[in-house]
Image (cartoon, rainbow, N blue to C red):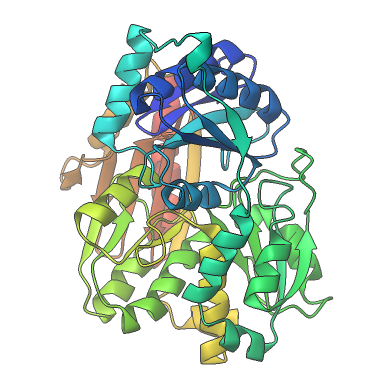
Length: 449
């Protein structure tokens, strides 16, 4: 089964099977044609395949007449910030985020520094499928150059947004696991600008991931094993492009990535009330936090592109998902792991509380996340079949199948990044959440056979 996923934000797949230099050149040519031979920024994470795809991308863009500002290995939120700062017409981030090392992707950024919206994404896909790319003569080929002071500008801006004096006064010691991804070595800039004592883990940009680059408790064991030994106050685990973050408490507890967004929202909304955006697969914790702060909550489809477009459309103050992605409009409307870590450090410093106490303030739910690989030809019909399990329940079909119960909910949907069906079940009862997830998983497995 060949794996290639198209979406409005880009294309991803397994390198050597579906993601090839030829495919990357065609998509980059389509994007160069779309932006009209104007300046474009390019960045990548540290995956071994990144250098190959990066070269293909640069060649294609310059062939359409685009001047390219090459950021090299660079976290996606810094690329997004720089696109807007330099007033470029767009950007391409070569990263598969939370996917394992076999995967890679092109993610397209518009001139506002956000993922493409539905209309922009469809236009790029139309150009790609038509194959009518701009091709220029030798005199009009684009040039390639590096950007100066990219890190300085970004981290200075981040330091001005956060209360760095409070963080410095708190004297926090922080462990951060970059999974040897794009965030590697950027941590020195972060710690210097935010004034905390850094203990880096897997901080070499060598392209070899010591664990899956998905911020989840199962991938936080290395941080958890040393946090008490080095007497750190908090641990962070990042994905490969620094758009998602999960937490490890000072006592070594590996917290679900679901805690990241409500933890920030519970603090930020008290000083900055406004509309909150989240997905239909995010824990009810954020619903409770929004309600406690008298803030409207809008739910959208899963995925950063959907969340950020809703953030802009609704003139909201916050957006986030249960994946550990958080965006604050006041800084930049993108899922930004550096901002996320900085906000949590500020909360700890200002409230003089550790992570364990801060999470105790949040409502407690039990969430179960399962996944089942499924042939792409069957995946949508099988998700639709899940409705049969709930003949007497009201079903939300706006993003897969979601069913709400008195004490919890279950959401079954196709993955936007892999050929799989995701099952997310949450309840006040751990047993009930597990039971619902297992029932759906068994039902889906019987249909796949």
